[in-house]
Image (cartoon, rainbow over all chains, first blue to last red; front, side, top):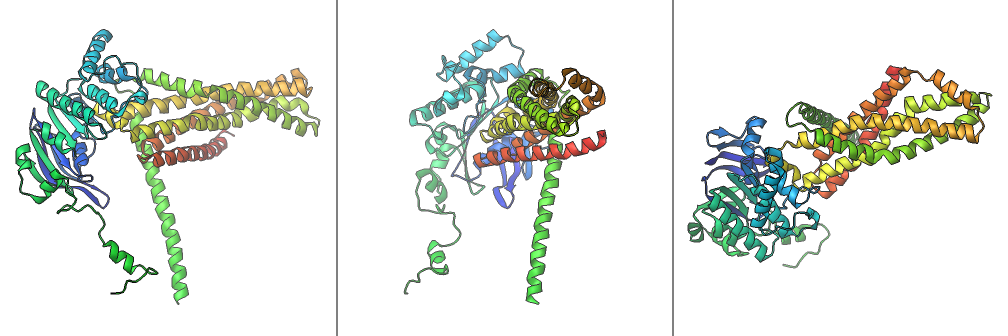
Length: 269
Length: 266
């Protein structure tokens, strides 16, 4: 069980995440959803230990990630994987070396064994035969699949997915969603998926957390989220422009700004 | 009264800005020192980064070789030309070898060599690390339980510290050799006099002094350029700004350190 306790994050004067309690069940897929700027990626990075929270604690079992010695943190990360929004493949390495990278770094396996494992992982994502390509030669969907194979290389127990389907065509997005779902269930992995793709999130998750302005506004099973009475939840799920979640982030009225600006035309009342 | 108020306000604003810049500068120096020392402290921590040191040494050192040879050759040639016409006024053309050798070994070799490494390798270090930040590659390393400070920063700092003295030595040899060709072959200075003055004037103390400068410059170039890349704003504009700053700050630092080290070694 991964547990966030009174987690918050501020960047200067901006509150990205208000104090939040969160629980991620072991062996389940948890989708963290919300609009742009709702704090979901911040929450994911906090849970992965890539950023330190302003307040609060992150518990992996009975170990607190905050203030954990670097050596222990890296030991823990050997059983984690992460798929980044823009894939984050190492530019100087080809597809094979990217997938083999964690195996080369953390195992003493023979190169032939590593080669077999890389082939298996690439076969799983449908890219066997593309080992020699460089990241710059891959399409967005292919890069995501290679990054998926790399995240799975060490057969992790916990995997973080940051916007796994964003920027992909529907087929590639479907492939990635299926991969997450199948691999998580088959390997009994704890998967934390950040997405604003409603179909993907509700389609694969066992548990959904919905964020708005850095606060959790709803959580539960996908069905309970779908049937929620909360106007904000329904507006997000159905993509309605009008509702309690405003589209505009401006704090002042545009008409007021125009009419009170010196030198602008005054309208007759 | 109101004028006085405006004047005071402008003065206060000026010193306020100055103070903020000074504080920011001190903060950055502290941050760079902590980051660099943090990376260096991982030198003896497993896993060893030997392969990456060699790769960086090859990329930074061998990659800068051509530009060092060209710069060294033309610096020696210009020094011989200028030195000959100055010394000829006093009838001391035979001292040309000593003049070229001392200038290159003590001063021009380390400084120009360092400038070339900054332009050729330092800027690429900053840009490469900055792009790794923008594209989350450093985060990916973190998540794969690989310390980016140990894997990315440390090999580059060590590589520049080793590469700069080696490149400066090559610069010195090429510079003195090309000075010989211009002085002896083109301007007619006696070859025996050129070599005799060179050997009798340049001491091991001068050569060690040049190497010490080169080692210090190489270390500082590595520290500054890796810091600028690692702390660059993760945007394309931020990486571009960091690369420019790395070149400017490294160059100015080399000149300041050159003065300090020269004052110790004279």
